[in-house]
Length: 102
Image (tube, rainbow, N blue to C red; front, side, top):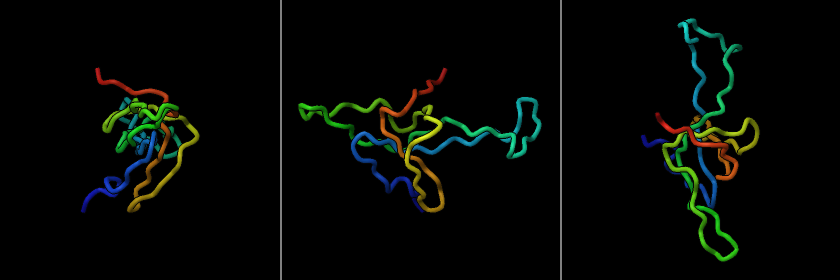
């Protein structure tokens, strides 16, 4: 079965992301209870729209691409559920930053 998010195409300058899961273990290898896990503000970009248009009608390119790991705001975005999986939709300008690999 194909992944549900592949059927979803964001419009304009919107981005479909899925939050990364918090670590279940501490750096020392201790299992953390759910109450101790902090909600991650990082997400993986799964789909991007074409971009928004400026006043001249030209498309402004997106700042993110599929596969990027991004920092998302703690609040905001639109939640969507596709085949029991939870995703979030943000505007390109709402993304705080992209985490680059070393």
